[in-house]
Amino acid sequence: MSGSSSSDTPSSSSSSAIRAWRTAFLTLRDETLTSSPKSKSITQLLNDLIFSHFRALMSAAPDLPPHEVTSDLLFLMELAASSPGGQDVSPIYVYVSSLVHDICKLQRVTLQLNSSSWVVVINCFSAMVHFFLGQAGSRPQFSLGHAVECLGTVRCLASIYQPKSLLSDDVHLAKFLLGVIESYHAQCLLSTCTSTSENVAVSTGKRLSKSSQLWEVPTAAFTLLSEAFTRIGSSFPTYIWQSAMEVIRKVMDVLLSQNFLVEGAPATRFLEFIRLNLITIDALKHTLQCTTLWL
Image (cartoon, rainbow, N blue to C red; front, side):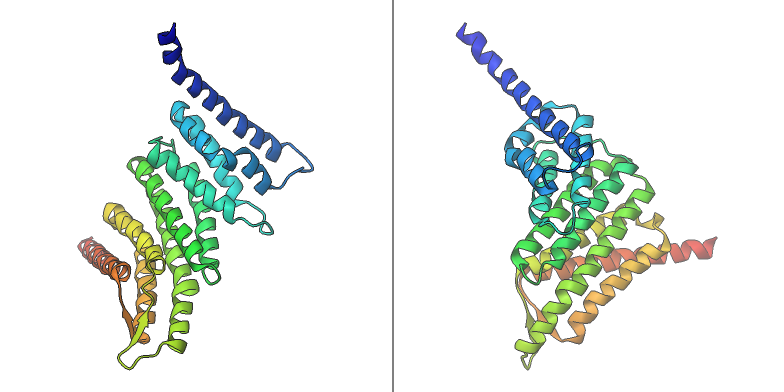
């Protein structure tokens, strides 16, 4: 009898977790899609139904059909991307990125993505990363740290989807990453350089921050971009690699024009990725030019 009881425990626990997942997401859909007027804000609903049960939902994911997990997480991403601007969306973005990442990376659930759902993924994470970069001036460690986490989640999802992705999907990814680097350049690097120029002028050059967060954001973006160019760059439209060269030039122009001394392991790693991207993109450019001449 005791043996039967112990063998039934995992199954019972799994069934309970599955019911909790389905109840949470069914209620969330009902409250957000059919209830009018809304009795709670999106933030309240997500906190009550999803985020407060983070660990339980994460543990339930491997026991659910992958298509169901995919559908529910995509719905969650759509809600996050469309969250009203008047609300404090920071907790929503932090939890959504963490939940998606942990389910895919730690629980090893393979999401069933296609071109339509890939658009949802990119739109959601674009909104989140740009939001965090915009907050970097007031909360640099918090915002830049979570921007890096979001890019890590995108990398995880890209590794799942890459074997069956279309060229248009990779173009969408590349445009997203170029936009992130452009936003980083405008909202983080320029402001940091301006502040440093005003306060830390040194005869041999100005020492730029060693803060790892400052460099981890562009390093993460350049890592993904480099992987995309290495994998399928020769098929990218010309404007993509031209845009890549342009954003790299903008970042380097800021550093070189102000005579900055970039120090520390994170900064060194960032510059190494810039160098690798330049080599990759220049090689692709040469290949495309040779192909054009041959044709």
